[in-house]
Image (tube, rainbow over all chains, first blue to last red; front, side, top):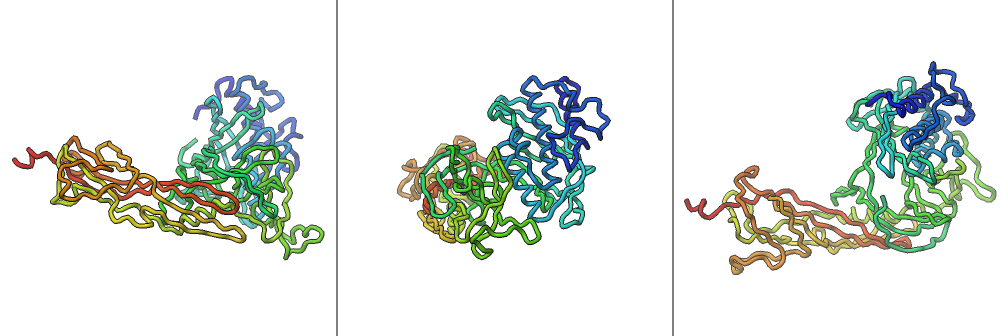
Length: 188
Length: 298
């Protein structure tokens, strides 16, 4: 996976860093202006304004991941925050995930760390791989820590970090996350 | 992702109204189940072997109040409700005593269900669904009906015949046909499935057979083919045939591996809808040895 050395990569990296340990469970993402927990020199408020479609898509994905992670932790969805950044299957899948967590008493604590790869523009869609690190995340079923937290289709513990490929499509003038694919058999 | 729009506008009694019918292709995305922790991947082709009772693919498309087309089936098998403008899923069970029934209702009359919103969403509230309301997509019932048919691939009829002492000749006609066709190998066959007030009837037939001759050639035949008889001599099959241009000696096990994939078309109706589901069932490879007359006589 290519690291963020390009200008675009810098935007993605800045956004990724802001997603690392910057959220407060008790605070909506839209209320967070200044990250405080990460020693990053590029917080969201000072990141370059996205200009290209790829930059805009990366920024949208970063926002989505923030909304998603907060939804996991709160087991609730802030639709006001979700609507601008997600659509399609991803929009539905997040609802299903949160509803399932509620019904089955599954909880998540801790912070995901996201590192976005360089976007790949496919014209009508943009693909971005997020290297998702669960080191600081704990999943519990009925209060008991789930070990391992996830298993791959072969029954082995899911690697960590694991790459997730997101698809973003243009919807009402904005790039929105529409689908995701956990690339469980590939390293970051 | 939606391939075909087939049918009709129907209003069902109760709170759920399903509108249009289509077939759809599944994606191959992998996701992590938040409850079990298992990574699960969608079946890419959405196909079915006809005998395992699995998903045969197909879905339906509903419409929102503003005219947008959306799948009738939502997350977790939830079903679109036109009255609620969301997909109605499992019973909402957040623990504890749960929310009280709405005024005038009791827990015996219905239950709160999860309501999945199409984008953009507006709230995260469960909806009250009265007992007896349709909560299953007729396509799901159509697939159950298909599974109950226990469909099988055809039995291959072919000349030259397979076998260690059998060999065909380069350039001579090969005849292919469906050997001893039955309802469950060629159709038509009808079955039904129901749940609650919804009943679906499905009729399945083979519309064509694609013969993979093992030499890179695929022959599509629309009927059962014509069984070979000795009096036909060296005539071509009038319905389904082939001629090999090369010997099979360079093939694995010295034989062409012939398969036949029957293309099933299932017309179904029920629940105020109708639609079509299509899939293929393929045979195991059958080895056919082909030689040349001059080589065989040496």
